Image 1: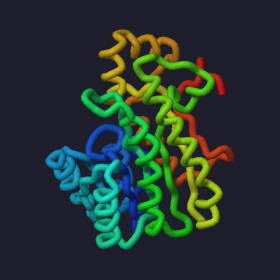
Image 2 (image 1 turned 180 degrees about the horizontal axis):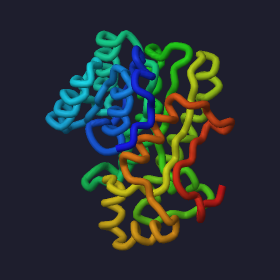
Image 3 (image 1 turned 30 degrees about the vertical axis):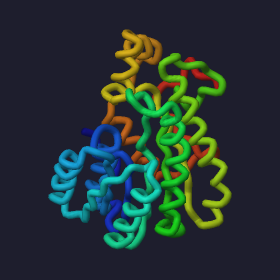
Image 4 (image 1 turned 180 degrees about the vertical axis):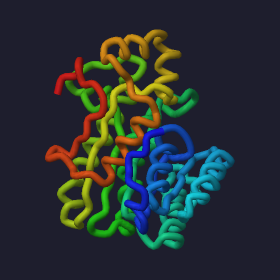
Length: 253
């Protein structure tokens, strides 16, 4: 696994990555810990997996808070931020990674609740903990980022629209964040191999992954995309606050 951040480059920093018990979130929080940051491993309902990751990260010599929270539940979210404040005193990096909407058995508006409303709620709950110089990173996909101009697969469209709504709502907060000295950047990636979303899309539309791979030439895997997210948390922010990862051919700006 490629290490995107220099050893000890984040010593003393405190990072929270939502949805970090597995997949992209887990690799992102691992990169932060390997660079010396104290980290929060957030999960919704997979406590054993999150605790196992937390134990591994503590072996790196950093402080680790393993904290469950349903990001759509204000009380649960408030409890998590209270625990973060008690344990770390504040945050320097907030990565809004948790998303969803393709799960079965969820309410019709669940995608919008999680991908827009909950993202704003997490930001609002974290604001008192974010000091000047801190950074907020929102993770999305090209299929969502470009949904206004480039159609996506019908199976993914409701999720893409909800994630774009979340991105737009967060972008509206940039002036307020700037006044507080808080930086904001969006990281958008092409279809990522090995993610739950890719698996669900392939199940709903067999051949979708291979079709996109042939079109793009290469698809990032989970660890490669997580490395880009980790870099986005520390590297200079583009003027448009957007870091595009992977091929963008076929997407209209």
